[in-house]
Length: 56
Image (cartoon, rainbow, N blue to C red):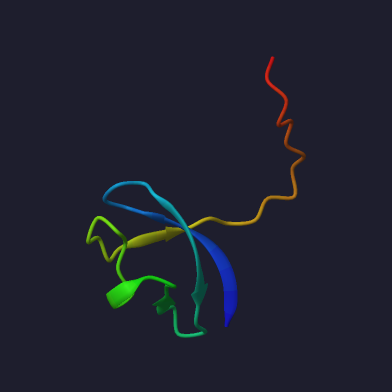
């Protein structure tokens, strides 16, 4: 089980959840769905590239 960043495919809300070894997702939300009711999520993959968070 790995903690991951997930994005709802319906409303694009970012949610932290757990991804099981079998690919199932466990969310800290009621009914294991997004606040919008969506139940499909994209898993954000980790990047080793540096990120410049400063604007400009």
